Amino acid sequence: MRSSTCAARVIFFALVLCCGLSAADKNSTEYYNEGLEYAKSGRLEQAEQIFKKTIEVNRYYCLGHYGLGRVYMYRPDTMDRAIVHLKKAVELDSDYAPAYFYLGLAQLVTGRYVDSIHSFNSAFEKDNRFVESLYNIGTVYELLGDDYKAFHYYRKYLYEKEILNSSPF
Image 1 (cartoon, rainbow, N blue to C red):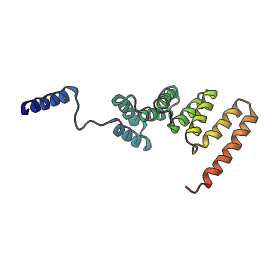
Image 2 (image 1 turned 90 degrees about the vertical axis):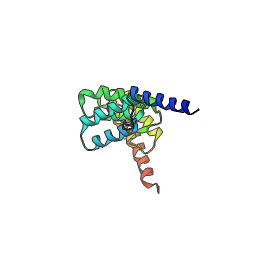
Image 3 (image 1 turned 135 degrees about the vertical axis):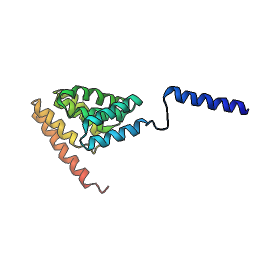
Image 4 (image 1 turned 180 degrees about the vertical axis):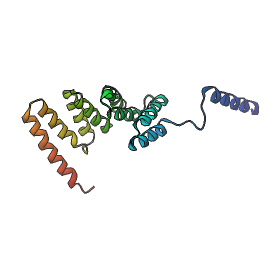
C-alpha cells in the first residue's frame, strides 16, 4: 500500500513537471482581475495582453472575452474584434447583461443598427439597471428615421430611469 501511494506521488509530480503546472500559475479569474486593473488605470496594451492570457488559460471564460472586447472598443481599427469577443462573451454567458450592452455599443458605432437594437434589448431584459439601453435604442431608431419608435424608447427610458432612481434599494 505504501509503495503504491509513493508511486502515485511520483506520477503526480512528473505530470506537474511535464505539463508546466506549478503553484505560481494563475487561473483565468486571477488573470482577468489583473487585466481589469490595467484597463482601469488606462494601460490598455497591458490589459489586452493579460485578457489574451486569460482566454489562453480558459477559452470558455466569459469575462476574458468580455474584457478583451472592451479593450478593443477603445481603438476604431479593432472594433470588429471587439464585436467578435463580445459575441463570444454572450454566447458563453447568455445572462451577462454588460456584455450585451457593450456589444450593442460596438454594433452601433460600426453601423450595425438592427443588431445593436437586439443587443440593447437583451441587456435591458437581463438587467433593468441598464436603462441606457433604452435611450440607445431610441438613438438607433432616430438614426434609422423612425421618429415614432425613437420617441417611444426615449419616453420608456425616462420612465424606467425614474423607477430605478426612486427604488429604495
